[in-house]
Length: 315
Image 1 (cartoon, helix red, strand yellow):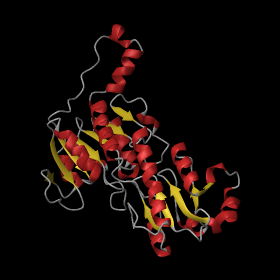
Image 2 (image 1 turned 135 degrees about the vertical axis):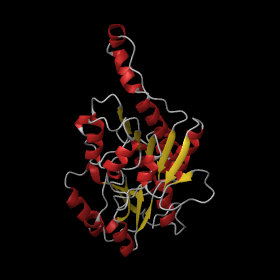
Image 3 (image 1 turned 30 degrees about the vertical axis):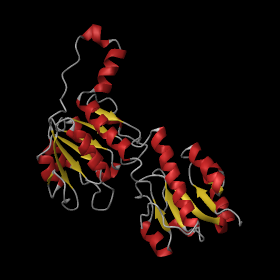
């Protein structure tokens, strides 16, 4: 048996993932090195695999420092921070971890809808701060059940959100690159038209050049002062400055946000808004799902080095 393939891990994503990688490969933990450039140069000839996630960038500059790289295994479903064109030019395989995080992300979308519309977090603070006996009943909020739900991006996660929303008797419609066959929901060919016919808008699309800032002032105004936006996709799908303005000016009813344009930075204007729920990009953040993601990321590496078909290829 020859030496174990060398795998570079950019950040500490999860101890379970690290342990699994160390048991099967020669692991190169980049985040532990004080001289990262020197470490890469010293080990470049031994690194055949790379594990990344949404918080790291795998660009041409990094790829050029790894001449023996054969595969990038993303510990995420999104690969928008991986230079797919450069990988294709080099013949570097790219994989991700879809499906296993679908349920968690869809669950969170519904949780964000409910918590923003019913102001669950703000009402909780109201009780904890002792406001109830002093100020009386909490102000009225908005109902979710039976409302019109628009979904931007009807892929795996979008469909899972729709199925859950059916239980709330929501009237569901969607926008996607093209109309889906065999889907019982109404299709709109622009996000603006979808927003004009929705009380709630949930974003589940991939981040691409076409979807960057696909939600701007016009879409937010179409949702209106009793409309709600939930983003579990990627931050740059929304024009964040316009979102902040719409909320400050009361042109949008509220928002539930798990992702932001410049993570981990979040606009301070949003911090004290009772009609806004802010989460630190935890869409797949359960032990169950992260273990499954880790297993899939490692299994893709094992398949590649064994010369077998990749489980979830992206290119």
